[in-house]
Length: 332
Image 1: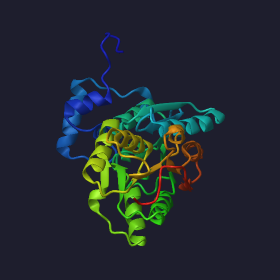
Image 2 (image 1 turned 90 degrees about the vertical axis):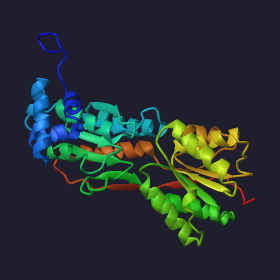
Image 3 (image 1 turned 135 degrees about the vertical axis):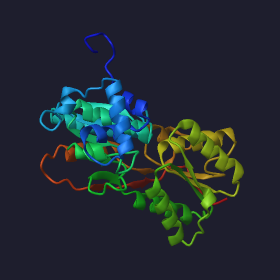
């Protein structure tokens, strides 16, 4: 709050007034990165009009920081990301570090805003399940923040360490298991951005000599409504599908709900394998076969990497495991 009682303008206010992204405002005001003359003029004019002044912590970021770790995840209510956050908190607590948490909604613009906030507030380190590309993360890296990605790597930011699961092996194992049960019409439900898992699915089918049907690779936004629509549409319109691999627990949950609504029986009509071993998976009827990956370990290891000041951190790939329960059966 300013002395005159008015709300202090933020970097987001400047971005909206200039009709650009938060990351662009950060680049212009910090003097790092590239921006056209027209863009620079728009940003500087908006900043002057709004009387925007970066916080003292932001202005002196390289000399004086608040410390702590920023944690950005798509959805804090998702069981997988909640467990990942728990792993980060556990490691940070043992190191005496505070953790600032933000939810991106898997929206690159929202992510850019949160990155700008972290820079402005002087947070030293960031662990993120990224939504944007390498350019989106440019301002944070240029400001000297320590960054580690979790669950996903980022194209154009190969030098940033990441802690990921062995998705390729996990997907291949699932496809091989289903193919061994006689399934050839196997569908894959993916969240937008799961390019590695989709690629691994295609490779696994090809290795088994199973034709790849692009219509059986369905992608959805990371919301429950979108996931349900994708699962229901697949089960309604492709009655030839005998098995489904869900790329995450949100998609697996949607498939279970859609199957019940449409009176599709698991595994008699459709076999189902889901990424993520969340508590409800074992409580389902029937209990779900899953590709297990340790979210807590992923978070803990990511925090270990980001706390390695002055030491070059290497990316880490964690193993996955196929846990067989009762949601898969022989091809009908």
